[in-house]
Length: 382
Picture 1 (cartoon, rainbow, N blue to C red):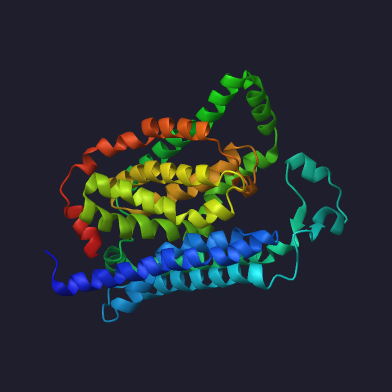
Picture 2: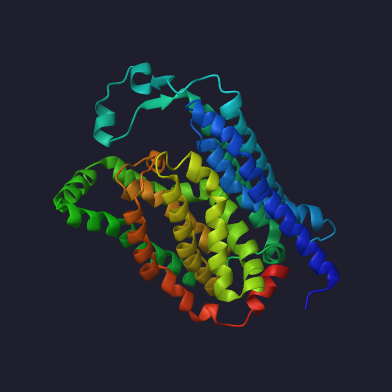
């Protein structure tokens, strides 16, 4: 049983988390709308949103555990400051951008280099100058990730354990990450294959990937994944520390193990509302919102399963990183631009729902969701 003091503390943490993760995120829909109307790139605001859940948890540690020596203060401070900077850069990208969407520079021409090398690798040499705040944000992410690693290692074992940062069950974690990739790849390709069979053009699909496998940029993108992970980890930690470490135990304590993780997926999906309406699509907003909820519920079940199996938040962080970064590679676009302005049909959503039910949602019947709730309560009180 929680004491009155613990209940009050947890309530304050939850209110602060909601205010930052949802309040600020939804308020940012205003500058996103303005930026969208003017044709500005909104990626920096999207990146800032990714960092908001963990920032809400980290600020709660700093504000409500002032006398607690086990709080890794440097680590939590880095998480909060990174979010603030990302947020400011996101705002500036809309309200104080000296460049417009048509201000583009070709680096190959600027440097006097021929375009042959770009054609060989499949890389683009053009840069939109209006993305300068996004580029600055990427450097901030790298610096913050390095500082976060430093904060992690200097914190010591006791502080890491208190804040839910311990790297437990490493071998099991690696196996679960590999399992996620093994499930994720067919989940991506099955809808495309189904569509190819329905339209009798499956051969085009195989032809496109035959060309893709000839591009050096494809292999460079794959090889760069383990290099990019530690340098951008703060963004993916930004979501998982908020959803899996903090909010999942709250939801499961209130609604039960299974219903709690399903409802977590719903609220996680609704948290994406700004990007669903302003970034991911232009012409299929209702479908994108529903699709986002389906995706968040399904992979949330698997992520929750992995978290219970390992009690290691970094396993979920690694899976989230791969989830976001494999899409540009597997789609063949080799660019994160593929995430923007998508078109989704209701029939495609039905296919995704059926596939997700088979691939990820069956993990709701795993024994981890049937065990005692003491793991949930321990995580909540951490």
